[in-house]
Image (cartoon, rainbow, N blue to C red; front, side, top):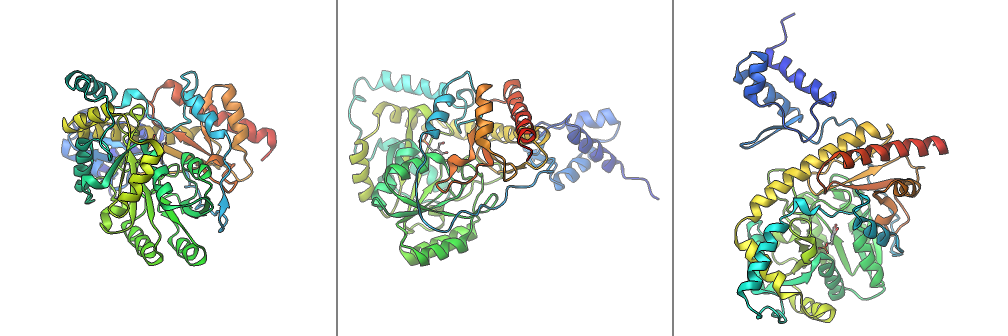
Length: 478
Ligand SMILES: Cc1ncc(COP(=O)(O)O)c(C=O)c1O
């Protein structure tokens, strides 16, 4: 038998380090030079080993930075199954579970796994505050006014330019600044629906959206959703044929909580169906900039400039949740949206909009985005690793390519609200799965946020959740 090539032996060494947890997801592998010196081989041999590991998906090269262990390793866990919500419209009744989570999320005494809010330390808050102070100084009192109807013109210009970079042509006059993405979604629904109408959504979906739908007296039809590819397009087609649908509301890039993304082919087919049935599409693109691959996924509106799409987004996940700056972009419904925005809140604060425009104009945003994407990618990898080694063997975990949340599926009979009660006693907050649906589902699921700096407390909290899950399973003999 011919001896194993040297580069394969080196690749095995790295794989071994990964499986032994010496090298964890998101960590940098030894530099090519260091590993070559340690093993007394040439750098070319090490590079050959690293390229092999790249092909196998164990490592990923980052330009000018080195090779990193991917979040996919070890992929011993299955993905959650595609959801199977009932194929009929239901009213939304969410209750006060969300408020409890939001209250604990704001309390630093609780481990921050509950809310999808990035920690301030990871965001560009300090820089932005400097722009805010400068604007307050230089503008005198002229900022203490209502903004122009659509919102600050410089900010809309900056958003329009950024949209163009991903193929979305939307002039500044078709952009409306809102108070976060929440108001954008609310205004979009106000302009397209009436109480009692049916809105088609992904399942599971973001609980804040369900709250808005509940407050507006809307019914929802939840679609089967795959944790990798998003909604089942055939199910959408059936729903459009069967029922009168007032609007669809999807998040095609890194849906919260599954982290799934739709392919361009699926998006084009969805746009075709919606055009045929004359149904507007509201797109929540809030996680679109937090991608781990080489390119940002394109929102629906980039694929067809004239499609009846209302894009909603904000800077809450990337720059500053506290500034409450979001926007709506639509080439088809500007006037109705503008009226809906006025009737909701007239306009947003002027000074923060100026500061945001100033910050975007300063050119630091892209570097900042690159940095937080790396951090969220690393955090997702570490969280998956920790869940993998701490949770019962039947646990399934998502493997998102963007965003910063993980969806975890326990065996069918497991009750995550019991896990939640026990975890809260130990000051660990997470989001139980039943909050993400109007159809009383996902009691066996939970969402973990990876938006905070990875530290001992976060790691230990995830381990502890795993221990509690084992205890609950033993108590109730699943
Ligand atoms: C999918 C999604 N849309 C909208 C929002 C709300 O965004 P904002 O804070 O800008 O109102 C969130 C916040 O978690 C979210 O996850």
